[in-house]
Image (cartoon, rainbow, N blue to C red; front, side, top):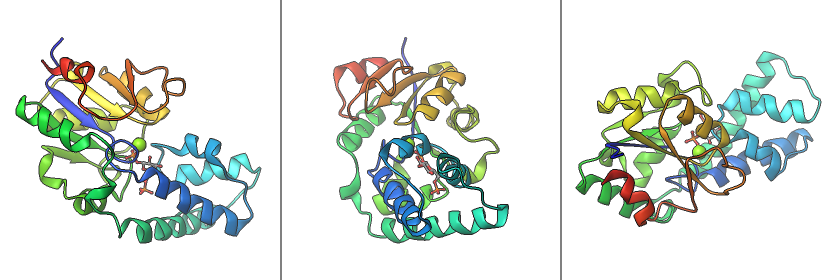
Amino acid sequence: MRYCGAIFDLDGVIADTAKYHYLAWKRLADELGLYFDEKINERLKGIGRLESLEIILQENGRYFSRREKEYYANKKNEYYVEMIRRITPKDLLPGVADLISNLKDLGVKLAVASASKNAPAVLKNLGLVEWFDYIVDAGQIKKGKPDPEIFLVAARNIGVKPRECVGFEDSVAGIAALKAAGMFAVGVGDEKRLKDADLVVKDLTPTEQILKLFL
Ligand code: B16
Ligand code: MG
């Protein structure tokens, strides 16, 4: 099968920003006396801001009103925004620049599908905005990952059928969303955690295994 569209998650796939999301949540959790570790953090990957806070509260058996949740989710975002102000092209994960340039040479249509409302700012700091044919962020969709909506919107806007798209994701929720969208799912990261992906790679280095999907 020759795929002609490639859709990329942002945090943890294109940029090393997943660590900043973790640090911002950790700072908030410490301030609130909530337990938070890397294992709980895995559950937040690809998940929206408010829902992420709900998971942390649930893990701690704590309850906040809607207003409190909005207040603290916003506070986490302030910490995160402060951290990503310093992002430069050096924060690109290994292989990203090479893979994108290879795919462009092959005429593959490229999109970003990120659950982050900060995606446009991160892509700007990384100097990547012009590389993509379309960018979907959380502001444009109703249902978050694992719902397929974000990937379907991306495919529609690059003019490629979902079954002709390959998606790259580092989160369990993102892989589920790609499969529900009928796309070929490439997991970026740990093989065991991303076991539902069609292929798992450690990073986006344009290996033959990845490139042959588009040839
Ligand atoms: P924000 P992705 C996701 O981005 C992150 O994985 C997730 O950890 C974060 O909570 C979510 O964006 C919302 O981000 O608070 O900046 O709107 O991985 O889908 O690119
Ligand atoms: Mg991600």
